[in-house]
Length: 134
Image (cartoon, rainbow, N blue to C red):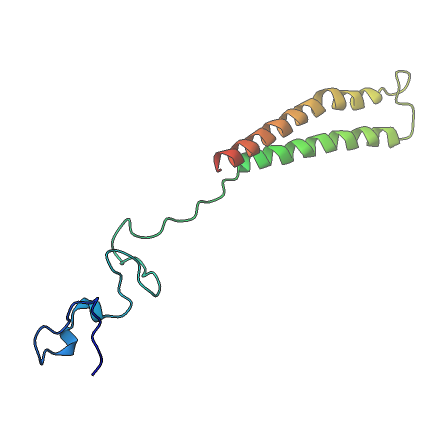
C-alpha cells in the first residue's frame, strides 16, 4: 500500500467505497478553481448562440474606387494614344490643313482632366476603405 498524499483530502471516506465514485481530486487533468486543465480547448456547444468564436473580419475593398481608378486610367491612356495617332497620320494637320491638330489639344485639355479627377476620386475611395477596416 502506498502512502497517501497529505495535501489531498481523503477520496475514500469509508472502507470499501467503490473507486468509480472517487472525489474529483483523484481525476486526471481536471481544472482546479476555474483554471484551465491539460488537453485541448473544447469547441462551443452546438445550438447555443454567443459561444462560437467570432468570424475573422473581412477585408473591405472599395470596388467603386477600383472601378473609378481603372476607368480614369483608361480614359487618360486613350486620349494620349489618340494624340499620338493624330500625329502619325500623314498630311497637314495645322490651321492651313485639315485642323486635326486641335482634336489632340481638345483631348488633352478636356478629357485628361476628367480622367485625372476619376483617378483621384477612386484613389480616395480605396484609401478610405482601407483605413476604415483597420
